[in-house]
Image (cartoon, rainbow, N blue to C red; front, side):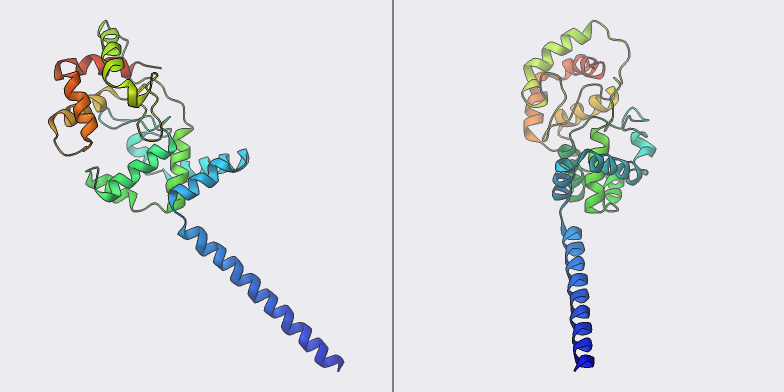
Length: 221
């Protein structure tokens, strides 16, 4: 009898361990199935220590991004955008846009496929937390003119301080050549960037005023 009871306890213990293992496996599978946005929401709602850990992980995951976008998201090249200070949801949206072909760049499209859903969220919070240094040269008289044009044509989406948000990029302190090229692409509908409201806004701005807006934004703190 005693031997039978011992065997029964052993079986129950084994079943509990199996159930526990299956439960942990289910949690792991669920975590892998989470979307980047779900991972991001969990990070944002987490403890400060967890947020810091996610940012550190994002720095490591973005090691290949640093070759062009810089260690802290301040670009090494004039035609490549700064990622520092961008809203994390906006960064995730651009990753999706490259993967879906809404933004055209074969190199970026290939790189985005390497990141897991969790890494995409971590990279986004890392860049969002980085400080921004204005990329422009010392301002000239055209910056004041550019501010007037910005307030007339751009402020509704990009915000009064040009810091953007979930759906629109931060433009304050952005690389001037990148701004210049992007505005020209929207104006000429060249296909790299497709967003009709932006084309309408830049058409209203006019090609002759692009340089003034670029100067204003690149020097904006």
